Length: 273
Length: 261
Image (cartoon, rainbow over all chains, first blue to last red; front, side):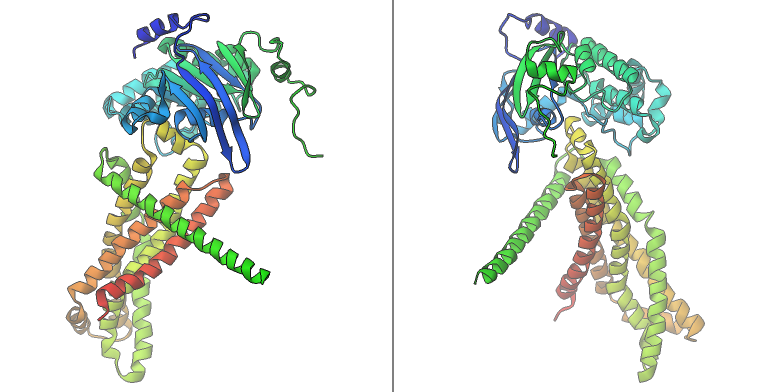
């Protein structure tokens, strides 16, 4: 799917219309032992839009993303991408779906044994869409898009600061021009300025590719910057969905408490006294 | 009666757990090997691990084999001289080294060096999401991480054992001729006369099997590690312990297969 195709898809996916969502979750459940982490998650992600899933630590955000990516198998429920139930996809179709997906992990998850340029072009090399010689140039081009010099490509991930690692991880996530990109806590562990820089880069990359973005975060400033739509998950259930613009004044007591970081409210931390 | 049943349940749980682990390892090995038959093959990964095992393990394996051969000659001399059987020293050294000590000691050294490193590397990749990242980057983690290691270790170990055999025999030769007063040509003749092809072949087969086991246990323990740094540490220890025990157990099985009458 080219960026122009994605723009066309985006135009018919405005609020009010009723197209097939890019990602559709219905009744998703997942337990680890006695702990029920997802308890019937229902969520739609519109094509060409950026959805931000909010929630506290341990609320099930990362497990939701891992279920969509096929890294964890849900106990029950439906996951559709472009109207296709991913549980029914053949191995080949599932691989083809993964080819269209990019993922930015919370801690970057860069491969220590490879230089930065090889990390950035890993997917292109794995898919044999590019030669190793061409990959160096491609890596330099993508690194420039996230504000890094071409010389960074020859460094090892261990030689980079946290912010630079995040930018390299973002470059890796977008290098193969995916049409769905997942961001797991993109600003966690970064100072506010670097967080804003990363958010800006995410918005730029997603807009340039015309991709659908699905982010999970508990950073409200980040959620407002990168999200079109937002949803909140609490105790494994989606308790609210709406626009990311007015977070903090949604009228939903849980979301507003979370957005304002208030101690008192319907969300009670389970602290042992 | 209840105590008896509790004890029985405990033993049963242990046995079921052991069977489950054995099954998991067997499936893991089968999947790892099956990727050899299905492209793509990650040749760069294979070569990286092959060099790491075959080349960078050479010093430790060589020193181990050399000193083992020297000690073996010395100990054999002190023991055999009681029975006036000193002339058998060359035969004892070459047979012990090629059949047993070369492959077993080389494998134990490589298990400590390479098995631990494999478990630590894959374990760290597991707990830092790098294994999941491989999946999202259209790469099968088993194919990328495990299969090249299995093949590299299986092919590299026999090469290491050839070197270990030569140096082990050399160690015995040096002690025999320099310290114990054997004539060099006589010592070499005794060595060649007793050595048969099957002695070397059995040692090389053992080496290949041990290499596979080291890579398998290193990869399996790392792949299934959990819980951060502590989990990686436990995986590393488990990989070395499990592969060392398996090496010794399989050594008996292979010896039985080759030499039992």
